Amino acid sequence: MQEASERSAGIVLFRKDGNRKLFLLLHYPSGHWDFVKGRIEKGEDEKQAAIREAREETGITDVEFIDGFEEKIHYTYQYDGKLVKKEVVFFLGITKTSDVTISHEHLDHVWLEYDLAHSKTTYQNAKNLLQKSKSLVFAS
Ligand code: ATP
Image (cartoon, rainbow, N blue to C red; front, side):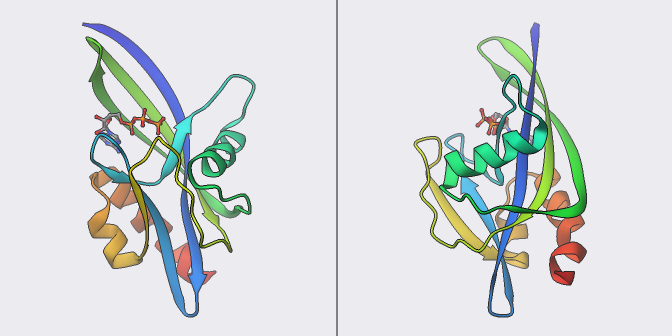
């Protein structure tokens, strides 16, 4: 089978609501719930791509990165007879915006507290990201 590779960047994005910390998940057309992410385009660095994707996919423009979080995940999937090997780098970000305008690329969005977000995210590697972000999020 032919192989292709893909690199994306994303953000484990949260906001404060009183004492609560809420995480943003998107419903992808292929069925899974995951964080904001998308392809890194030519001329962009990873953080620029992550910020652009957040803006395009949610309308959120006030993302502030939290230092000390940069996690890569890897997975493969088949598309058009090709085996696509994908790497996604995730940062941790906070926003003050609660209103989300999703693009045509997604079906829905939800803001959830940690435990619910952990069960809602589809893939184990995404759950692991959430777990790794926990201490930084609750210290902020
Ligand atoms: P991007 O948001 O980077 O533009 P995309 O929307 O084109 O990506 P993916 O979300 O990477 O596509 O989904 C492509 C395929 O990989 C789908 O079949 C999806 O179910 C699967 N997939 C997505 N995320 C993961 C993951 N974290 N672990 C394993 N498989 C995944």
